[in-house]
Image 1 (tube, rainbow, N blue to C red):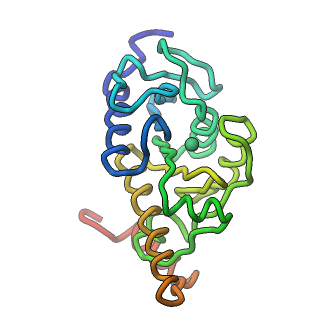
Image 2: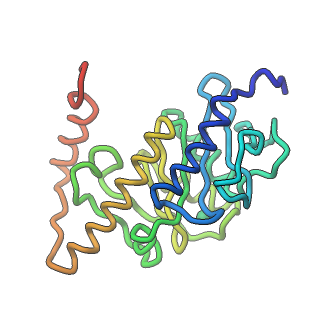
Image 3: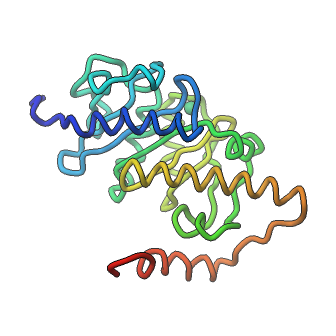
Length: 220
Ligand SMILES: [Zn+2]
């Protein structure tokens, strides 16, 4: 490994992204994990295992390749490194993966229910819905394979009895997906207590996704 290939800015992004997960209430303690890929070299920068976010410095980040081998770093990587790298390998369009244990999304994950497309921000940037992967134990190759298979072309997936995985083109994008998934799960649960949530039709979802991709925002 040529040390020059390790980018300090990406080490720092994993540190800062982890702190942001804590600040936004997406995770507690040492749980959850985050990774960022260098789109040039394909190297993946991942949180170390079992360290509180507040104590992690750039030197604690572990750099791995697409074959799940460590190429730089003195720590053990997050036990979910296989999940992160399996998703990166099938989704070349994204460069950040965040796994968390948020409360409302986890309510769906423990009842093995999908989060339906009930809000516009959700269907525009996450997908038509968020489904549950097949159950498997944490940190196993089976979990990595099941999660990578279940996420498909959506930007989030639920892990049964465990939590969520959200992805994005960068850390900020993945954090935004985490936020919108958790908010939608919370809205659905609240809405169910006062009535029947209206699920957006497939046709309207397709129209909104087209708009979000092609027309929303400036300079398009
Ligand atoms: Zn977890």
